[in-house]
Length: 347
Image (cartoon, rainbow, N blue to C red; front, side, top):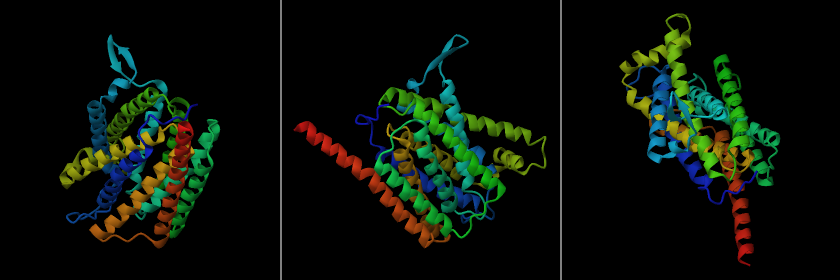
């Protein structure tokens, strides 16, 4: 499969957009779930936060597809005589995986006792391990600098992880991480088979159909779970989801929750475009992960300055240095190769 990306926007612009959305997204989520805002007396449970944030994500997605005109790239199918933009089977399944990623990512920053960096690095490290496995299964060549960047990124994650001082996870947090990683494995497999190519039209169609599925799917799921809460009064998580569509509005946090949802959708848009780049997953995933690692560290620093939370540990700062090294390995060799080919063409 061709990996010519000369006519596509630079992956580094997408990485910047991902980073710019991820910093306030993770910081606000942690601040609200921990009750850190000045007027808060208690934190908001993660499951209670999900309904409003995912609803905002869905409207953010619809607005983006409409204003950009990208919705026209979706496949069209006839329903009761009407031609409607609808996803195909594989993009629908990939969208369901994306929905799971959206929900588990937001929840990851709400678990008590787990810092932004700890949960972020645990989940990002798992995807870094998955990337070369998916490339191998997809028969994609993994270039040398991608292997080096993967090694540096993984070293950064392990450094910060062990520097956290604890490895134990609660059962619900462990389940959250496992769902996140399984969803990413399936999603990357579908992307590698169907969308990662030099055909910009196919890539855009896949992206649009996946996005059309993800946010509505998680909103519908949460609505059903909120209704089921009436039949299971002792199910704590179900009661929290129900509170997210009933009593949450009394907390005076609606604006923050809507902003979290919009920023979450921003990370989904830019993150998806990074992963859909035509190059191997072992290149694209570290770009994606490096952006989020740096964003998480900056969010932690922001919470320290803004609300007096703990400053990132020295091991986490060292991990950031390793991530910056990984970015250099990902960016410089391809640039040198591109200039060498351009010079050869002129000659």
